Image 1 (cartoon, rainbow, N blue to C red):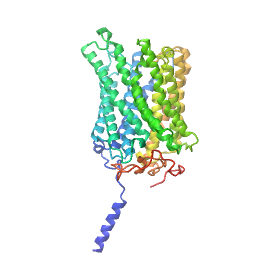
Image 2: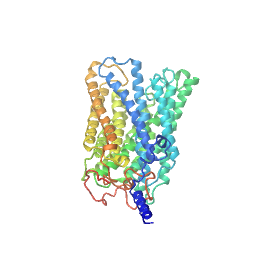
Image 3: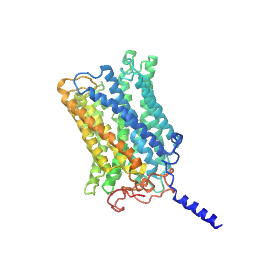
Image 4: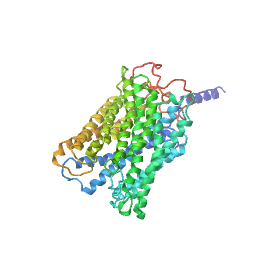
Length: 555
């Protein structure tokens, strides 16, 4: 009897000492991942997928920069160059920039940050990833059989009668990817409304949640418009109906109105979640309540609403009336106000605070710098006289990349470094991480700032040849792209390294506020053993002991 009791006691002790199941070790088989409904695993599936498309898009960017090293078109033929910049733009916009922060960080963090066990519709969440994969596979097939040469905007008449490439297949891929975005946005909205922890009122929500909520509204309201527009392009090509093609009695301006009604708000689908990330980083690493919480939260909603009213600033030289152009010019200036509210409130938070220059904070500073340059140059494009001069030049390319690529990627990489201990349970090498942040910031400015000058002095975008006097600036831009590529590649290397060799992270290595830091690293399958009850205000850093950030504490 005694031996039996001892055996039972030993079994109980071994059960207590067994590591708790988390989302990473709860089934290692491929099937368990491909059929999962765990929002955290789906986020990891998205991370692998969007990273793949990022490097595909980066490969096309490399070809573009190599072609532009010399004034002569000596690397590719003109038709090939048209396909390369089109595939670069479509890959980056539709398969990386739009999904990257909502689908990866949003999927992982939204339930954790509001104290929920999962998203409201776990199966729809998995379906959204499968739709993304189907769309991406279709797009890869389109690349392999000859690509598309219309530009990423599908402008008519290039996409109607002007192109003999795979416009319909590429359009179908974008159409399916759009449904993936709609399902993700629907899931976030219902989850945020219905599944918040007790006590987590709207005025206590993390600003990352506010940003994803506003982004989800844009996804649901805007994406159907571009989906229908792409379907109409396909119908016109298949059945020769006069919708957009002037040769058939259609109106090409109608296409631009429909396309930009979605695609300008899509800019905010890309940038708003990164703004939410930066709000979390600024307040954590300045050890201070965020300044103007309500203003930052409501500015996200304001951006989502006003963003639907400015689409025609893309059409100042397309033939719209002068009066319409003046109205859209004013509205474009006005949409900059809520973005400026965020930047000024972040700056006020930093004032007289105790700043820690950890890697996530470096990316937050980089975001503010790049986004501010991108935003201010957007005001140039909102000015009618200047816009006429620089439309379809490299000035527009530089502005777009400062906002979209600089802003989105700085926010995404800052968020990945901030939440990586929670995602993986491991820490990364801080020295290498700081080096990568520096390389990304320097490489980005060296790549795209010369393009402002190129555009101002008259170099058109999408040209494969250019006058010799533009070569020095193009060489600078290509050199910067090489530095930028190294900066982007480093995090992938040391994140993978840290999965096995990184120091084990504590549950809250940054001593941060927020519900996601009150569960284990990595989180258990259903996030929390007990539903948390929120009794504190958002970002209560004045109530959290200001412990210096050190090396991670092993558990």
